Length: 335
Ligand code: TRP
Image (cartoon, rainbow, N blue to C red; front, top):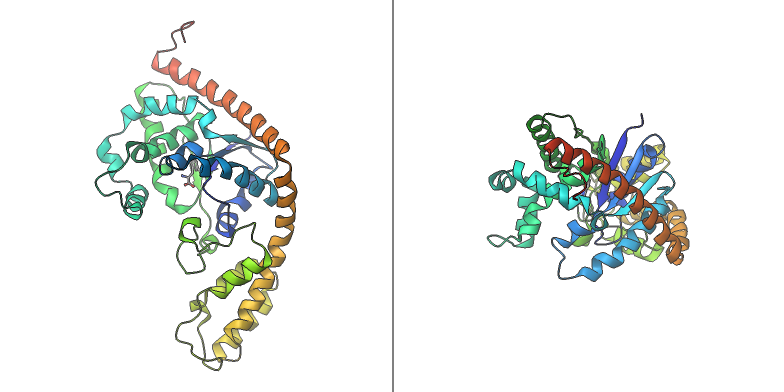
């Protein structure tokens, strides 16, 4: 039996290098050996973008183009729209009974997001509850593996908790306990300012960026602040460009040489960054070109989402039947 993979993204903007290193690359590998579902988490995105529905809607198309451009294959991965799978909120409704408001209040990711958004006292209920919906996303597909960033750890913990509670309470092993797959430490690629790479922080290099956009962003990449001239010895650990080069430059020995020259003070930051621009552009060029082709084929993209969503609904509906049956509320013939 193939393992099942479920993961998703909030469609609020184009995907970036952080997504690639942190998760997309892994998904492309996993789709070869697992039954894979990839969710466009539009309903979750709306919990903090309900006043800009159009942004979420248009980014569904953009994100799917990003997926396909990096090698996610719709024949192997089912790409679907979260809000079209009506079984998900139904499942979340049953899970609401198994979690306290107090417990939800301790979720560190949600807490940090509330702070960032300035919600303080007035947190929209939909936003506060999104972790429960995410548990439904994962369990509806009986996912064994969930490749996500480390910030998603509290959601995975909550999932495991609810699965255990549900199966114990209703005395049936209906739900599957998922395992998270986190990027290795080297994989946590920071944004150009050193913070977490994020579209909303404006520090991301997008998969769709053209050469001039890449060059402009690389120029802003943080260097060793103690260095005032080319001849000052620098610390490559403090120059972010090297973190990127280590991930994207195929010539590892050359990067080591650049680092050594940086330490000795025989190379300018500009020279390091010129190399980085070239390396990133070489990496992104084929992705960008494929992306453009997909982008023009609107009906092709729609077909992919339609088929993926059909299969996702089928899978979730089967789980819901089992869930209702375990709870003793299948009301045969009534619903
Ligand atoms: N919360 C995830 C993010 O912000 C998106 C997401 C929604 C998700 N549902 C999921 C990820 C289920 C994994 C599994 O990126």
